[in-house]
Image: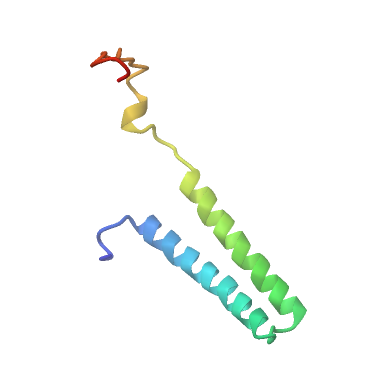
Length: 86
């Protein structure tokens, strides 16, 4: 994706998400190879990666301005019977 295509915050969030996922993935790979770093380093890296993923997810869920579909109120359209059972 070209850099000018998406908003800067989306690109920044995607980069942060990728870094956190890579960190957790490298810890998983090291654990499968039975070659983990010291427990303090492994735990803090894992906690930091999870915290980064949580922050990026929470940032993506925050909205400040209403979307276009929220402003018109509730509109209900009655269904038409085409034939029996449909």
